[in-house]
Length: 125
Image (cartoon, rainbow, N blue to C red):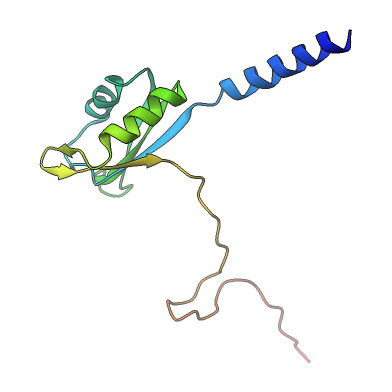
């Protein structure tokens, strides 16, 4: 009975991690490239869940980088290996696995490390 329970837990564990797709960062993209173009490039290596090019909020213009999610880790790793430094419309794109953004809560200030940010109560008396 314990062996059957162990097999069930291992299968549940594996299925839990299968739901996560590999997120791939693509940098140095041509500014005129669309999300469909990006999707087509990566579909040559496997199933693409999503393709997103990041654009400036004010102008709507591409910032020159984007993200692709792929269903299969093996396909994603192959795409990263093959496409990193590949030439696309005269630009060598940078492709690697996307890492979670680190939150650096440093407050405001300037580049010299000055303070800023945060509320400090002032003594009135």
